[in-house]
Image (cartoon, rainbow, N blue to C red; front, side, top):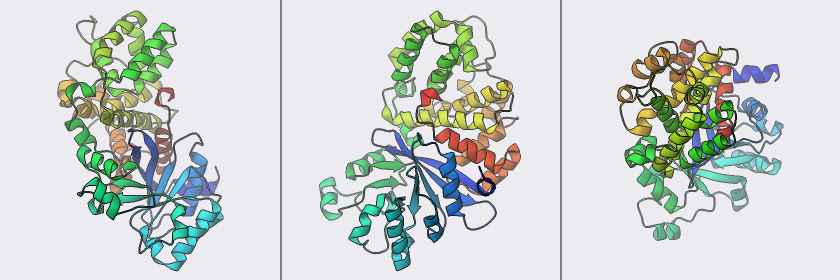
Length: 401
């Protein structure tokens, strides 16, 4: 990576939100950029940077900034189909803005309209946008009958809904025609889930059983456990229960697998099948816990000692347990023997690992001033943070991560 790329990445704060479709799968990541030391993001350079960092096999990224308009300098870049650009609505209010949109379309840039256009878009420009983003608070299709919405408010551009706060509102948005949701109403999804909905995923359990039948390596089994926070928690809790016999501090999920043994783990997994999760609305919550763990593991760096990387990954996964199980963390951790730094960070927000958790929480939204402060507290550079973010959110196959 050249010096210009490095300097741009090192001075731009990034935060992300998943773009989730009707099947509750992430189809892209919306990344918001904020300049750390100025008022304007150098979008053309950042576009090139992300093009170098973003794997071609990953889901796309929708890049947006607080800039009023996209710069003409973007036209000097080679279009990258993996990097979508969010076009501010103000861009459509001038002839120069419309000219740039048209030229970017001609050169193959993927554009997303970031709100209602200023005035009526010329018909030839409608295909320039892959989709638009409509906030729920201003969507006139919501609040009236679906058939009426279709007659009164015809949309020629597919749209994703932002500002969705509840699962009920999410369903209404999809019924009204939205193809995706920006972010996910985690708290409301948990509130309306039935108790069994926070249990391990059926597909994860069956995959583990298949691996055990093939006598797969413990490292491969660990990769699958890592993606399911509910299963990981229950595994650690079981090992530290009276049924297992000896409370022991588990340093990694691989350690847990070796302690348990394949035959005993197989019997335990068969019991878990009866309570596997069937609520699709909880899947984004489980994936969020995995991404958080992966981000924190990457944040401490490959040069960090193995136990530290394992511990911060476990911390990231366990940090959303109260949402997954709808129980207070102190109660969930009562019978779980985890290293003291993990417990201190989860229960009291203190200790050497807590700063990494606060950084992870900050990047799961558009970045603000608190992110810079938290990076300083963790002795992590902006570039380290951004590279870790890219690594975490570009994982398409969670089981392979």
